[in-house]
Length: 434
Image (cartoon, rainbow, N blue to C red; front, side, top):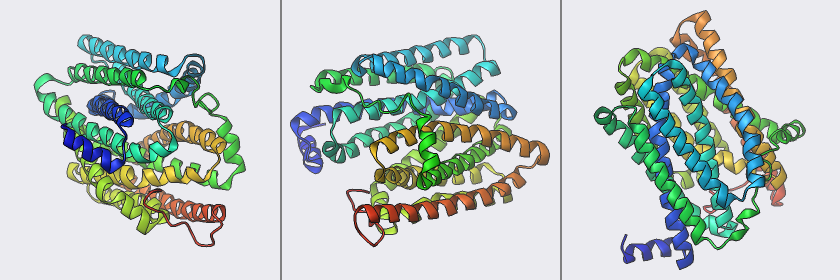
């Protein structure tokens, strides 16, 4: 990038020379991190099918159990070891995991190994993304974050496009297994940029981490019991993960019947991710801020459940690959660009204690627990009914309840923030808050 372009970007986001070095490294760190993950994601989805579509409920249950075990261990390490020393070691550990899986897949392709990889990557995703944003929270204060998180997040969006491109167009040339080597190499580059950020940053207070509640997830349960607003957020997330799991299981059955080749299935998953991430980036650029500001949080929380209900109705009428792809692309891109920012906005009206403790409980126990419960519910329905068409129609009322919950929680948020800001009218989302 030449000096002129650098100057334009610095002016656009009001980035100082000192901040520019950090933003540039953080952008590249996130780019290579997301590229690495999104190469593995299509492989994970293929491994889920390889392990057996009738066994996927066990994969979701295993992910839930592993996360409950690992999160307290991770919190303990965060408290005992300075973050700038621990985080690079965690990335090196994950790189070694990828290489180990690569060697194992050269020896065997057993369903047990495929299941282990599926669970491992689900946990890997949680930690690497969490680590990235936690580290950035230590690098930048709140005023800087408002200006700099936009261009930094763009690095992740670009990586989320680059990764599926590599997976889609290289799988036929190098094979599914060798994609792991490419992912490990990109994660190694991301680690170098993480180390570079540590060296460039003069904020030695990163040792005093913001580990408010990583090791106290269960405190969030007490907060949910006391707060009607948090209960509604928990219900909203539970319904969201239930609908998402149903759609994921539908995908597994449809794709396993449509494609017999592992490479073909990986190609489909890579194409899906490429379309989702490309559309998400476009929507984030041109729609998200304007939609949230003009439509408001109530509509923003209802639109994805509406798309889900319409999507399952479509799948109930026609179980085709093209129908599935259209539903997934619309559902996931609108979720990332509209609903996810809206969900995060719900927590801005809470105290720091409420925010971190409740969010950790919701993002782990409710989210992954909902995955596991929904997986078993789908399996039970499939055993009793043996018809994906009827199961799709069964998911429509769940999506409708989810939409109603979004309406209710959006109204509650408007009332809470109106009282907080001493306004009688519901909150009007400004450009900055959006």
